[in-house]
Length: 620
Image (cartoon, rainbow, N blue to C red):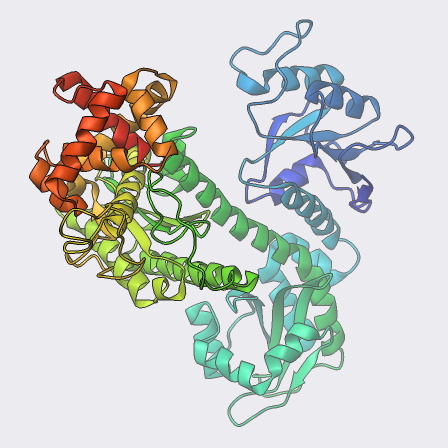
């Protein structure tokens, strides 16, 4: 790794922490106080010849020992060390007493205190790029108030002071905007201000019609690509304007707009003043961006942890602005796994060879196209969930969309209504027709507090599993009337994937449901999940039957599944399998004679019921 200078601007630890409005860093210890100077930054470990004097050292990468890293950094003169905020920090060594109540940080904190080096922790939601950007920007911020009057004035009052100073230097009215055209600061509004400036400041952002007008005129393209001051002459009631982009390197951060709405021309040095103002504004806009992105990522981290049931639930709920007694529920939209067909055959089904005329394998681009369809669909579902009602928090988790829905008293049906709406939107987008498969939507139960959101999420996931398995089972059952009526059918006749009703409209397998609607099916799935480890370790006649039959195609397992589901009624089971009843009776005799499995024994029937369910359902 290499050392990165923060410039010798006199940045102190106190100034770094004050600049960190987004909470990227947490101070654990400052044995020499917070006014210690930070003269540079080290990312990772450096060779022994490199001096760490006065630098802040980021513990990037996998470290053999966090405590040894701290000792070495302190011994080479580091001002501070930043660690990941993680419970995996080294425990206190035997010769270093841990501070009572210090928790997982105790070992590292005690080592840092003895070494005399400041210790900070990186927030769990942040990454090392955030920390490096923060340190560099804080150094620039510390240096922005040194060198000239504009910088000195800005240092005392931030962007508002900068806007007023630029107005004085240019003779125009100033707005400073971010890349979303939101107004971050502006100079005083006089009676001569044009209507556009008034509406922009009062609305807090440039009106949409104005942004579109600037885009059509090509001015925005010029602004995004130019480092120079752009001149826009007066046009009717719109006064003359000067505009300049604010950049950090090549990254666009925002812009400064000057309007000559006082009736007079700009000053002779207006362009020069705008160029200097764009330089001075950089650390302030970086701070604004860090604060905003930090808030978004902190909320995403809190939502992810809340739904997973990890960490301090009360703190996560507080971060999301949710009261601890707010009822809520989780809705999950989960696309079909692109690694498998839209309606995969149950594991018990025998593999079938492709017909001689089977088309060649689809080109690799087909998978890319399907992935693009799924990504577009799930992105739109996320937008739909957010806009369904105020207060809904949405998380993209892998390919899924998870929505945490605050529920008003008496409005519990809103949860299923959202699931139905997501299903309708997904179906209208035609993903299944484009080879991407359907989207399954599960609505978890309403829980009395966001602190129990993980329970609702777990049930929503279970709903999705049950819906998907039911659809797969229905797709591969023989349709009524298919196969020889005289009993020559094998029960392997299947509807082609995708045929028949796919919508959750009551005419076919549903794509959405609530936990309450599925009822006992969820409890059965929980039981199967619990007994699967026991089944996989077992032995005996039932185990021998299932394992041997699945290895040879699974005919008996499918027959037993239909027989047991039909309450041991041979006629009903044979009809479901499209078999002659005598064919099914012959198969049942084979079960008894070949494997010694007594179907008249209630315990054996229970074992068989569990076994065939487990054999035809993948693990959760």
